[in-house]
Every structure is written in C-alpha cells, then in structure tokens.
Image (cartoon, rainbow, N blue to C red; front, side, top):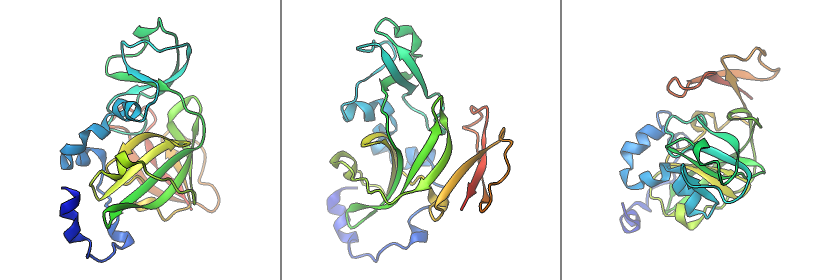
Length: 228
C-alpha cells in the first residue's frame, strides 16, 4: 500500500481505543501479513540502518568492550538469546552463527506504541522498562511514562496500522509491526510474573494471565503480570 492509496482513507473517523489494537497480534502474524516489511524483523538491519557499531558472527569487533550479542531474527520474542559479552577483535568464535554483536547502549529503556492515522503515526503510550543487568530477557517492571518519542523518517514511512519500538535512550534497537502492550496499555505499572518467582502479589496490584515461554526456549517462562 502506498501513501497515495491512503488519501482515500483520510476521511475515515478517528479510531477508538478498543479498535487501536488487537489481542491476537504478534510478530509471527505480522511476518505473514506484511512481507514487504520483513527487513524490520532483522535486528542487524535495524542496528546498521541507524549507524550503530555492529556486525554479524565472524566479523571482529573494532575494540575490546562489552557488546550486546543476540539473534539476528527472533520472532519468539522475550529477549531470547540476548546477552552481554566482553569481546576483543580476536574473539570471532564467541558469537554463534545467526547472531550479531552491537555496541552496548546505557540509559532508559523505552517501549512505545503507535497507531497510524491520517497518514502518520500517533503515539499511544510509552513505558519505561527495568530489567536485570545480567539477564536481558527478564524485565522486573514496566511503568507508564509521559515521554514522547519522535519517530525517524525511516520508520514513519512504514505503512502498517500500528507499530512498537524499543529504544535505549534515543537509540532504537527493535521495531515491531504491531503494538507491544495491547490489552495492558491502560495499566500504569506492569510487573512480569515468572514461573520461578516465589514472591506474592504486591499490595494494590492484581494478576493478569498472559503466558509466554518463548516457544519453549525460556527456562523461566512468564505466567502473566501484576498490574495496577
């Protein structure tokens, strides 16, 4: 679909909140629904597009440092396979085939949802994530924020109904062709609940069932969320 073909749709009424997201959206459905945008599932493509220091397995890093190493593609989500590795230019065998390395960014982790209306993306929400420093796949809290994240032109031109971006500071690290929080976006605080957690529900929160084990690859699957 081109921008020109959207002109006829601009007279449509505004989308209600309940219509802005679909609970059955995920990356697998988006892969089949938007084949023309499959490059956005490629996290090495995203890193290279925005000028980050990065490279696939077999390419040496430019200098010794801590790097994020993760799969180039991961439609199962949940941060599977992502980890911090100290690499030197001689450590080319430490990054497995199908993975890539990228410079490590420090700062606030944002997850932001957008919906496309009138030929542009309007921001729906923004959450700030807190995760364990030694476990990139395990977030301990998502908290709603008023932060406004401006999309670059490369992403603004994607012609799909809704997107989600993950960023650290102002550095976009993931692009999803669907929303991220969907049925959870009206909650202000979201605490992921994992199978091996021994803690009880915090005061003032309630539990929302939302299981995800990363297709069986996550040794501590998420059972749902405590929300308020």
